[in-house]
Image 1 (cartoon, rainbow, N blue to C red):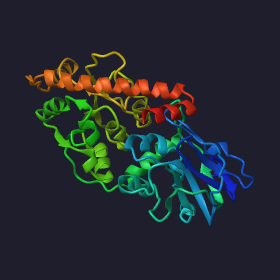
Image 2 (image 1 turned 90 degrees about the horizontal axis):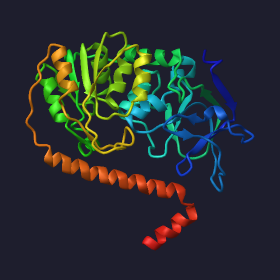
Image 3 (image 1 turned 90 degrees about the vertical axis):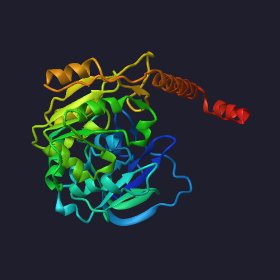
Image 4 (image 1 turned 180 degrees about the vertical axis):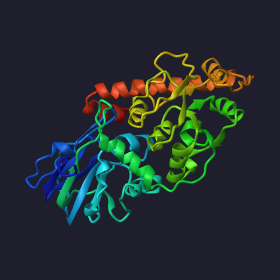
Length: 360
């Protein structure tokens, strides 16, 4: 499969990610851009050649596997950065470099690195290209996913391989995965503590993904009876469930659809139990899944779900006045950012520069 689902470029030149234009990728020895190195995702379009100017080309007399781009965001890493990583499954490539582009990172570490290790990579192999670099051969695996949220069997097999290679440890049977210790969530999400309390009162143990190793997270999804969490990055770890007959409870913090999660669930053949907990008093906010703000209220759907599944619902008498004030302020900020982005998008670059000079 590897030979028919990859492109091999002799004396290929890898261009780093050019942040301002999202250009970068692979050129052949005649400096022709290789379309197969492009990333054409729903969230990001990355790829094309640009003028090197006075940049000096680094010559590496090595062979490499080009895996595309790396970003230090767990959800985007799982869904967007690993579409070519299925290729790391053959000992004959153990001496090949494994190459990524990145605009913010110089090195892959932590759980991001551990995932590649579970696929057969090692730290010495993996590098991020920051300068134009020519390799003796560049292998470009074909993408196993596309912008329409489709995937092929190689992507499914990749997740099963990760689970099979992980070190599984004992974890509680019922786990609530909380975002309350995650820095950015604390500043733009309201109401999770009340939702968390409902699950704790019904026998769920609270764990915090950002404090866990990858193997511990894999252990949770591949061995637990039930996992509950807020919709977002956390439930994407369902890709690590393996053959486990997992109950996945997903609490929606927004009315916006999460297509990446739908794709992940199709890949591992699971139907989550969704609970709507969002409160969205202002039309169009949030405008996307990542920006927020989000306000969750643990009544209605959550109460019905708990009672329907033989669990208890505990009445909560919490003041909403203070939360409403904070939430409204964040909504005003979000609208301000949206207007500014629209202005910049529709204003020619020269005018943007002149206006910035006048403002300063």
